[in-house]
Image: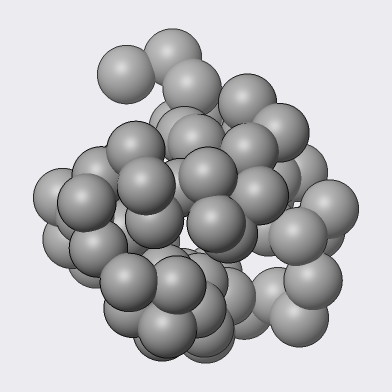
Length: 68
């Protein structure tokens, strides 16, 4: 259920984070500002109940996010 709470854009950000892209690279890739990427990242962390990138990606894997 947690994954369903992520917006389409938040899911894009998670996928790009998992690819190892930086905030700047993500912003450029999906044509948004770095500040917007940071806001999406904060929302993702809050929704998944984590506080850092490594935990975010671990939680997303555990929830089957990368199998969608």
